[in-house]
Image 1 (cartoon, helix red, strand yellow):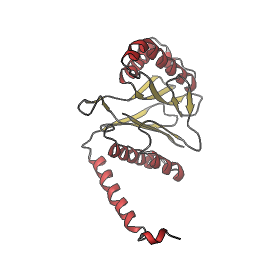
Image 2: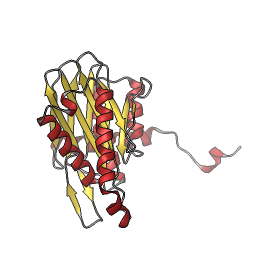
Image 3: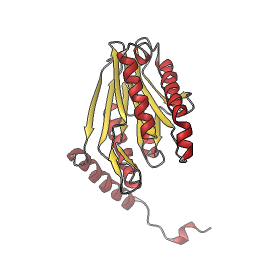
Image 4: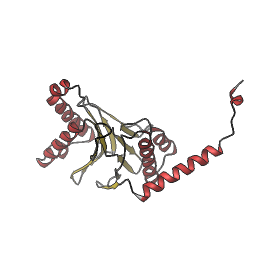
Length: 243
């Protein structure tokens, strides 16, 4: 399983992805699911992936080969064109292996989040479906998730409601990831973080290991504050709910 998050804020974009993949509880590995591509000074793309690991790696390999040849993301006129390009590659990879995958009952599909900026456009994040089409995040819901999305969604909705800035958005993204990892053992560290400031066409990237002191402090503080919040709730007995 996978969990990837992308938030679009007034000042820029925040991306966070876990690195855990598993083929059963006794076969857990670490693979990068967040990839940064900067074809030139006017194009910056961040791609996050979820789904069949072999398919996603083949798609990323193809993107890199096209970039080296001056094609693909190197000539994308905008994020929408880039999203259609990634979707087409994803479909082609699945079609290439469909017969073999069907024989063993495997799902070869992948889902991607594509974010970044092309000069002349606003920064944005888009979700590319296995079918090759895409959606953008909206002003009312300026974040996207792929993979194990249900456990960490509340934290992202809080970020939207509070209209937080970049620094608080990073905290909330990590909190969303931590809650998901606690709820599902197939999601876990190290985590890859990417932060993009609008108009910079450059991205700050960091890997957050499991033994990170900052990660440990966030987990400890969340536990303490949640316990304080529970203690602050009114005392309840079953009779309080009867009419």
